[in-house]
Length: 634
Image 1 (cartoon, rainbow, N blue to C red):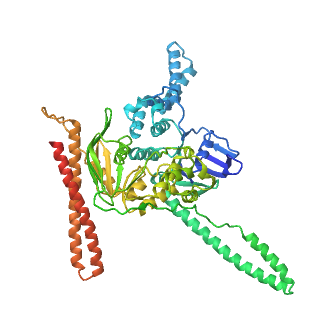
Image 2: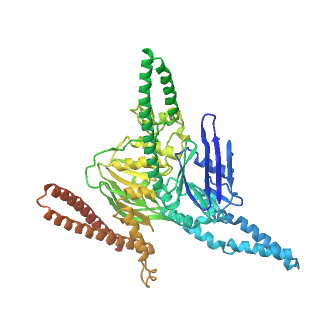
Image 3: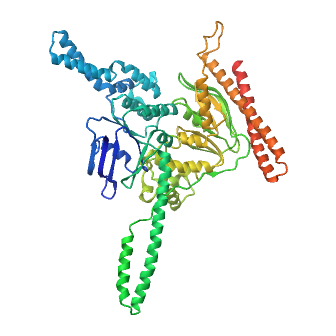
């Protein structure tokens, strides 16, 4: 059965360019479809047409009869004074209408109405109400709220007081709670932390209806979708697989088209050369060859049907690195931070060495951005100290990019920020970041989130730095821009500290994980895949809650948690030291075996130096953690 049918869809917002130009596709019941395309390709416009919010200029859209469509895109306006709980409960409006009619019928029957039609109607309504889970709505709401990290306190807050990300989560929860057959999801993971994203993935895998999602989250696309529809130049291109399949197949199709194009061009060149020779002979008096030359030229024109395949122009720039001297980039000693009665974290001790790549993870609201702002001096600590090494030069890409003068054009912003830059140099640099033509004269204030990030990166990459701090760097960026920033980070040879919920990005770069939870930071000296395995093991090995403290034990719960966290980090550190010592012993054995092979010996010696450097770093961490634990216990 076909749930969505789109035929010959055309839509434009000005006379010069059609965003959708004859778009045609269909989605079958139960399919999981990923809708891809660069920013501005018309993906959100298509969703607004599917829901009836926009009208197409031409073409036809058919939604299967009786199928209910739910969209997460723009946040709807709710009545003034609506709490989060009210928004979530609004998902059951249809169910509440059934309940009102059931109650009215029950009152009529209690008053003596024994009409067969009344009894039948009441029975039908009761069956439908029970089938929709009408007697168990509280359980459904609690389950969804817990999965999306919508806390009990948050459920009592006014919806209008929430941040944009919080509103998106609540609206996603409302949509899930509705009896919806077709889910249209526009960047559903953009404001979700890792836990909420994984919960959503699990929900979608169990969802029996149809899902069409716009997403730039490659990990999410790989786990959820089974078919890709790419919108390019207003038309649809189809790929029967997840994102990984799409990426490989797209490149294969490009190479195939290029091969066909080059083959055709070679044939055309041969024919052109033959036609030129025929004309030359005709000029020399061989009249019959003239008609053959004209015929061949017409044939050549008919062959010019395949245009040269193109790829989107990639941004190609790298961070300007500055040499780092020293062995310590950052030292954090005993810092704490609270806002009123809400304590984010306390007694944090951490150290960053040169060349490390650290991912700062944690649920939304735990204080990740606050910590980055404290490291960069934008926020003050309540206690403790943060010290950077003397040769450290830092660049910070904040999550919500802000410019002090949004009324300025892009080119003027570049000139004012970079005093030694001419107007032409500014335009050339902006062009490298895909701000071209009249775009450079737009006001900064009208840029999208992704465009603001690109503009800030355009400036950051011109500075000589050795410590790069990124807060959600891939948010609002399309896949091509994400791949570009990943290549730039890959080429950066300095120290990296970043916050991200993009699992693809974390898995590619993190060599160390800081997990911010329960008011402290748990340090995992390992990559993302190993960290996930450790977390799974921790879940399996979790013990029941500890008994209540014995009488006379005056330690606070927060103090106990801090000590437990410190002991846990000490254990992780000791495991890392044992592993590195074992690696040193293995390399010593290898060096003995290959003592007569100078090239192999040099490679093994280099590896051993790297391992010994890591070992020294872990031993320093062990000393710091031991000192920290002593301070807490005293």
